Image (cartoon, rainbow, N blue to C red; front, side, top):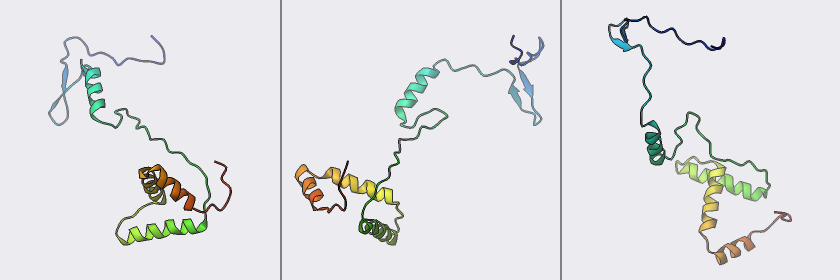
Length: 127
């Protein structure tokens, strides 16, 4: 037996498997047996719920990037936030950008080309 690991002492022979607590109820002294179909149940629950069942909740990938755009466009973002706030909807700038991306993805190829060609670039694009 390792010196670092100690097992809890076992109850003396003839001792009941339950003990009485201070409030008069009985509790099991023996550890609970593992469920026989735990693996099957876990797979079924994993299919039913999109959230991982592990103790550590996995975060979705968020990418931080630094980019610049014209001050006028930034003011438009702030103005959109204020318009939504006046309607009782509090929104972050990143959420507005996500909504814009969703609208761009919904466009057809010709509409997308036409819209992008209308946007004036303040500096040469390297991407």
